[in-house]
Image (cartoon, rainbow, N blue to C red):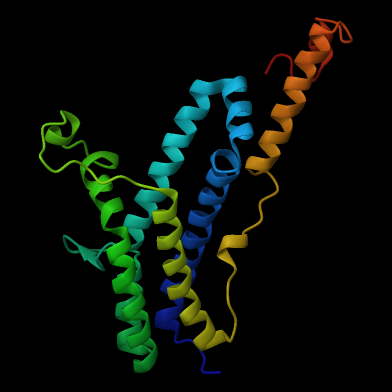
Length: 217
């Protein structure tokens, strides 16, 4: 296998970390809000307003992250840590055949991310007045989970095209494992609801929680 040029690897490794954590945030989003109606009911019973905020923030954050990934290599004279910067390094220091393949994938990704960029530019990172007042004839596009899934698939394809070329391997970004993730939170919420049931049934004393380690938290 050809060794990855240092000029490419420096940017690639930084972006690899970014892409990993974008998937981490999306995995948590799906664990909490895309599992089942029963799970949504559980979240609403525990703290509906809080989880409404978390859902909104995570969805917006993933859109912003995808928009940053697809930013130009430079903005206003400053370099951006984006896939376009990596693409420039691939063209300058890498294999021509590889850079042609990654350019094709990147163009598809730009198309998929166009709606997210509109949201980023008009509402998520800035607050466009006509959009906020709903006075525009061109409202922001609707965003679905499927749209984000398709964009993330292209991000993985782009990154793994480089990984495969230089390292003969693939990174399973979509299988990123976190111990303290959304599933861990849901487990604690279930315990909490069960505790409330035991209180109502008189099987646990109402002042029992005062004896716990976290009662002043």
